[in-house]
Picture 1: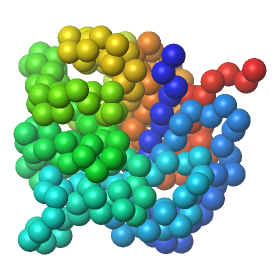
Picture 2 (picture 1 turned 60 degrees about the vertical axis):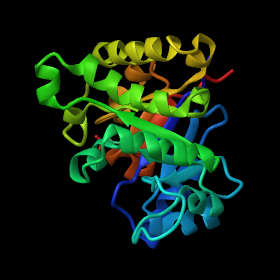
Picture 3 (picture 1 turned 180 degrees about the vertical axis):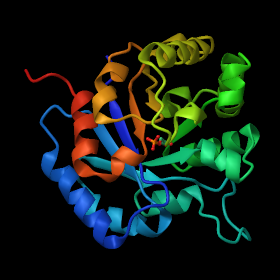
Picture 4 (picture 1 turned 180 degrees about the horizontal axis):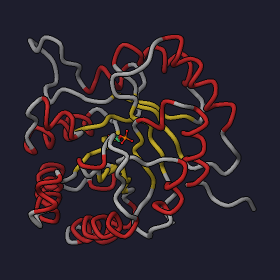
Length: 252
Ligand code: 13P
């Protein structure tokens, strides 16, 4: 069985003081059979994560990465730099980057390759907009986004995590119903299986979009939902811990 993974995407939030208290709160409340958990912090706070989380059970990483290895790319951060400071994860292709920074599926695929080459675990985000869902294009949109990545990474499918985040559910309080989310997750896993059946069974596919303590258990009970990528609710230790608990193995 795939162990659940709950990742907090802090987006552009936090400060040294609030991060420290959030991380202390999470560390204090983690249970014995907890789901895997991680936080993805803004770049200036990765050093703080390194100082506070190295050797802890809480994984950590970045929210974006350059597709380039090094050189004259002002403002960008390379995958090898993220690995150098100790990141384990990096989010790639978040819908906010696709929408506000014009990231194409091809660029997202290149970023995924860069992350893998540096030894990071890329969390590859896919998801449809409301207009796309209403036009009946959900399947085609997410399949196209995933295929661009699969074509680029070749045999390395089992080294990525996928996050299905319907754009209309992000930060809106509107969650996909468990059945709606499961339908897309099942489709994504079938697409993976089309390339490598065994690897497809091991890939963690997270759901993201207004996942909260009160809906997390039902979502994560779906057979192909292997955890969550959490925005707003990851900024409060008690909420984040409740979501982690919802994905944790029952006590023995
Ligand atoms: P919310 O949980 O705030 O809806 O954000 C989801 C998200 O975008 C995580 O990457």
